[in-house]
Image (cartoon, rainbow, N blue to C red):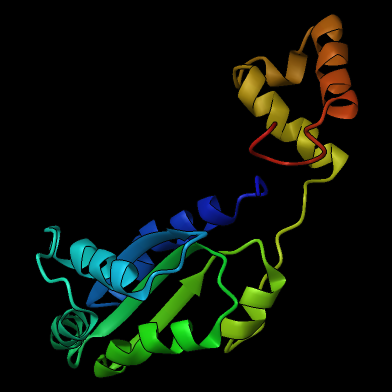
Length: 173
């Protein structure tokens, strides 16, 4: 957490080149409790911009399958924690109706990444000291000040990075 998993996924998801490659795109924040019915409802809501009144998983999956029929589809599942293959496979059933389906998963759990992986996963690491300083400068000082930061502020900023609990986490910086 805090290294930028969600931020990176948002950059990809919102990139116009990515959006032009798919007929439909959906973003769902999953978090710790992986409920296939709830996630399926959220996917439908993300696609239709309306909430679904259906309460049975089979009905939801049928509706989703119809919406995806023959279309290219990008799904982002943000912050996935479940390591259960059966729930993952059940969620994917209606996605087979699409002509092309790409799923991007963000997780802090390597076992989850290995479970859902069809291609090598990308591990985000903390920032180096130099990169931490550059990010801190961008956040703390105006663009005009970055090259001529007063020495005392420069020293204070570097102390914050070195001695704080930021430890290279972009969100903390």
